[in-house]
Length: 492
Image (cartoon, rainbow, N blue to C red):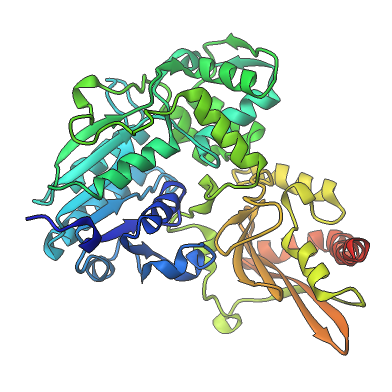
């Protein structure tokens, strides 16, 4: 017999990612018993649902961590990706899925739910092939696996939508590869979440592959034209040329949009084939259509845009970090570990209220900029993009408020003590590791601000890098601190 939904414990992997973070919120709002598996529990503490879930800290690559996380679990959601782990990411993904399946079987898990990608065309990318292989590895044990294969996900903050949005906004005339005429089957994020939530409430476990897509099948060029119309832009002029390979397209997307080349590459690779749901893999007999029906592409785009305009984006593609991301490596690296520590330390004291000063500090970056020297910050972002980094255009999820673990231009929020301390870790390409930290305190009726940039150089090259840009620091960092105080005083 199956357990009633209210008595089931649900495990969410990938809870710090784009889909995972939203699924946790949706399940918590439905009063489900949720446990999440994350590498670092600090990273999710800024989420509004953090206190409502059980947090299991560990890695999906570690069997002991999996065994602990899967104890008592009825349904486990597998929402992990490893596409940024280099050329062998497919082998890494396969091994992770195999480990997870074996641990789930040993723990007596009743159901695994996996979100993959539609892969029906004979010509599929390495990325989509890896997604399909991951599903096969998860299904290699006796635990039933419900594999939901989705097309392009349309929602505020999704990498696919950000790529589409910025390409359309910035290029009224564009030369494009021929794959823009391939058919796609987009689906709104709200419908993806509907199917995932419904999978948690199935009366009996299901072991089958299902394709999920929205009500429309259209080309990527069609989607760009629809977005242009919704945004009040003129119809885009699209000129197809055969010489733009997926690799060249990825480089171009990395320069034009906030999506870095490393992430654009698998996204573009997925578009070289037709990504259309197979009617033979319909989910309708297992999970009924949403009561209001599936969301059409125009409505999905309007919903995504309204979330962006109203600063209501819940999660973003840049929220997730790969297991080998620099931010993850930085955790717990103490000064006494033998590394050289180079610093730029600044302090200021002002009569402005601490709340006003903190407001400026928490609002740094994104549309607000970096309090002066913005051209230098922009140039550093361009340089970072040119060498394969994330660049400066990731921006912010919210213009005024931050939470631990989210991206902020080419930084990531590593620590946050509301009203007191903000510590950012640099995710730009560097010969070392860098942090930027702000601390505010009240002393003798005045507000004291400490701003400190810290750099752990990697070898002689790292040291030479620091000293070569130190002249710029003499201009950038004093200007930043001075303008933070000036803007806080102006607001006051």
